[in-house]
Length: 307
Image (cartoon, rainbow, N blue to C red; front, side, top):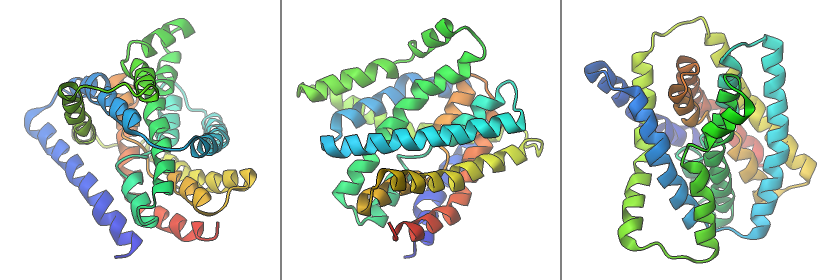
């Protein structure tokens, strides 16, 4: 099975089926999208974050080198996105919507099976992807919430909004419990696992409901495609640059660059819906980047062999 076919059958098609079910449910029953959003932010996402952090396994050296890469890569990516926002003169909610569609990417249900395929389930490369996944799960619940609300209110109020979301408390609790080997009783952990496993399905249904609810318009399609270009082309190019600057080689460099090449995260849609910040643009960016990634990720996989 080629990489192209694998991505199509194991990533794009399953995601599309779930999104399609969300569209159908929305058309049939007019779902309350805000309720779905709140379930994701206050219920499913915190449980997913806790179990992910509590179960994570990686060495201190791997974590440090991955975090160093992430800081360098993210600084460059943010600089490019901010430059684009200023050159296009984006106003109101579009700057944060564009920013979220590029800097938050699908490091979980897309990147993990992709990593397993490309590196034949190598535990070292998987540990790198898990670290990236943890970071990418935390950022939308902190930085993402803050940037969307910063334009609407004062700094103190925007920070206050961030601290109303449970994810900000879940992360230190999970890390402390893991660090001190504090066991979670089975009657408590089992329900947490059930809830965490429902996160991706609910998030995809929310995306589908949003797509089914919106009126498709070509007015912002140019911005959608620019978002896709930044996410799928510029991002992995900056990943190559970051590993070169840091002198990383081999599997470490390959896994890090591949982690930068995946499509836009569902988190950008959840943020857009929850805070009514360009939800149509966010939904289109996620859907189109997932489809286009079939081609772009295949190219990146071919190129990382030279690292």
